[in-house]
Length: 205
Image (tube, rainbow, N blue to C red; front, side, top):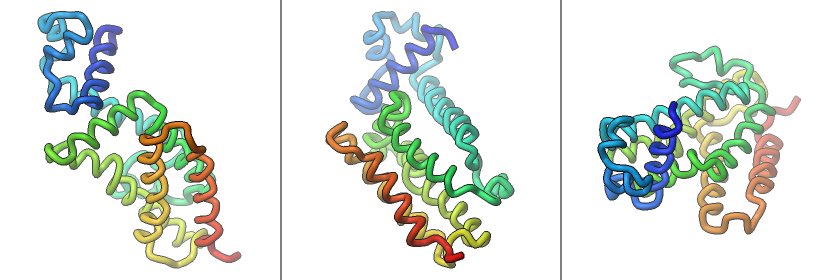
């Protein structure tokens, strides 16, 4: 991706996160970059094209991160074998990394804030918010926990209930970080949560 195209993408996303997708026009984006709309259109067809590129980027990043942390990168229905023999340690490492990703990474943080703003007035954004930040992660963890139960790593319990219990603190701490920033060591709290969770729900050997 060219430097100019990348600058347009990042500037647009930052504006979407600050003001909301619907409120930001191509003229606003071009003005923030000090370029004309005509110059911007040489790189993106329209605002929707920019948005589609943002979504494509976040999914690409997600796949790369899953590979990096050696956790499943696709839905269970697509590749169930990826969920077999999942390591608890790798899952915990990925959980902690996700906190930093959604709070400290500029692209991910702005993407999340854009969806948070727009979820109440745009059905497409609401679905993206659910799939990326709410229902999607819960379903993902449910599939992992179901396999861990079958493998005897976790006690025999409802995997969906476990997924909600496990994911809820991560979701809450991300939102708390938005309000207070560096005031507390939320990562440490999350780390303690994952350890206590495994102690509470791990199968007795």
